[in-house]
Length: 40
Image (cartoon, rainbow, N blue to C red; front, side, top):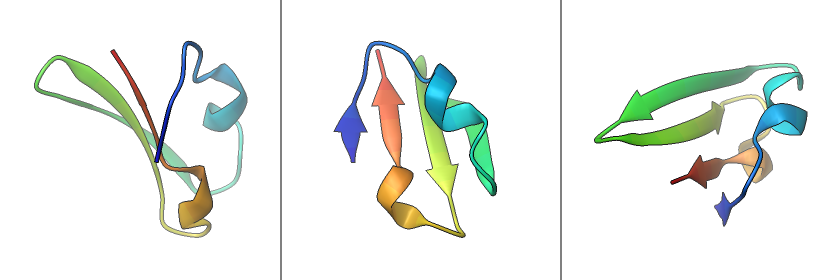
């Protein structure tokens, strides 16, 4: 998982979901788990 300043590029990938948990924003991708990321 990467910590990134901007999740915009990851949001548009196929299978990507943006989830907010505990005040942090996560991108979860079941199709391609390489693109997991966190912001904040």
